[in-house]
Image (tube, rainbow, N blue to C red; front, side, top):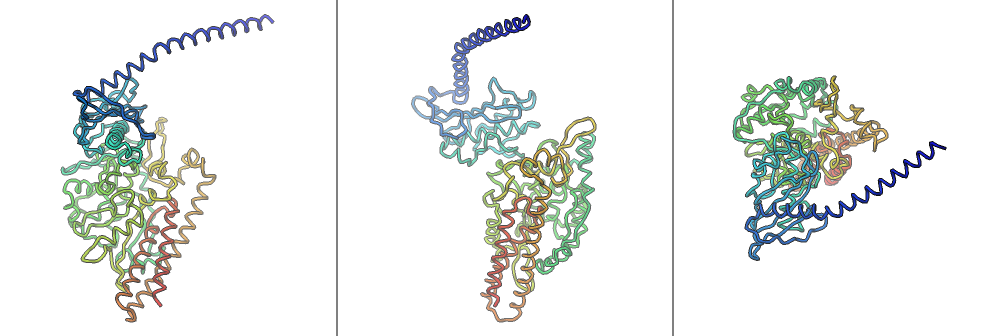
Length: 570
């Protein structure tokens, strides 16, 4: 009983204390809140004046719902509009980042002010975003700002740099056209994809080999070397007998093997039975050639293959994704940034790194330069790519990689469109995960330190990833994926054999002389389209796992064109 009275006394005392203290704090907040708000307003006014020192008034602009803007003002001088200024808050590396930016009447940036009293980016790294060396880059800039092109990101602070760049683009778009900002023409969401930098070109650069980073990054280097364990090679011509006729007219119908680990790229390209005339065949094989292109431009692609072979030694390694700046993701193959255009910032840097090789490409007939057949995310679909090739004229004919000698069909040899497939319509994961999330898992060394494994592997071989992430939606990811891939392979084989039959039937029609050239050309166009859509699926290395919807749509179209062509071969 005595203990009960003691507890009651303490409880009542504590409750009364909480009431008194809570009331006092409420009173203090009631008194100080207007003062704090007034100080914030005064600080904002001061920042606006720094951007437009001649202004004598800032008139609030109405905010469009969902614009992502904190505020927007019209800067006035003597009643005349001299510009606009706005503020947006975006996610940085360590917290939220406030950005104030002004735009003059010509649409150029007059200045950028970063940070507030709550700014919490890493001191000495992300905090450099507030310094003139970074912010002065924006002055006089015509938007959009692009990392690595017209704005250099802060070394070691890519996320903070990207946050400021995205906020500046958002503000500028809104101030020039409030109705345009929500649609995202040049605006990235408040939690933007990690932005890649663009390699600087025009100067000679010595590639730092992977082995030279081993002392500084021993775990990562060891994981990179583990790619040598991926040494198994499949002979596709033996595994897919229809290739001897579907690819008839080019060396792939005789010499076509599966890729091995990235450390074998030079060995594989130089030992294949396919002939190589020019150095452009080294585009995705060695950073030594990538650096040569960045130095010489398109002229590098026209170097004889044997001459370039004598100058390369490093297989795909650090430079391809990072240049010579570890930790930074850099687009070193500029044909990717050229193809993405204004959409570059909408694609996560981790995806762009892989897109430098895992894409559909062609060699420009005039320059021999490695090029991508699209100019934006919207034009990256199989339909748009086929239209691009059909509209690219070479000596009065639609572009082709080769011509089948028996049928006369000008065919397109699709390469390996993993990027286009993963980012394409129907992809379930493109908006949530990157290539690295699935194919470069986290690892822990003997000291308990976490690092990113550079052993590129299937997520099905990463049980920790399956348990921590995939299992939230997939009860048995391995089983689901295997069933999906088996179904896709069966269908790919079936349509491939249909194309083989179409090739033989069309060849017989050509030889028979029973068809006019116009009739044959109509059938040839159908056969070209059928082969393109089938090839888009066949050469994409996920066997449906990246985007089964898109793959099935491609096979549907391949069969449709096959049936139409066969119907004309009576």
